[in-house]
Image 1: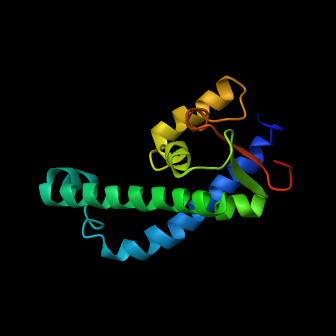
Image 2: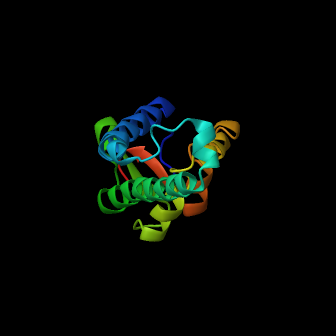
Length: 146
């Protein structure tokens, strides 16, 4: 059972801290390797080679993004943003399992899917996103008793 509903702004700030870290670590260094960065949008989508490279690059970024969330939350029960905001991931069913962490983070690399995931929490005034509900996890305060 979820002990206490936490401030949603703490979660939002933690998420943006994590996204800054992901962008700093992934996108900035890889930006110089983008062969299509000098193409305009029309050229990008009409040049099949550039489109294919963009799709592969997007998939790689999505996987790295997913790995960030999964590895930190499974190993430490927190991402760097959650550490700063003193939040942690918890299981509703005892020990946190890898499958739970995987399921709860499936929407993170995909903006539209993440919006739907978050909308559930806002529409139903829940303390859990939809994927947290499916995974049996929730976000709690770090110093709160489990």
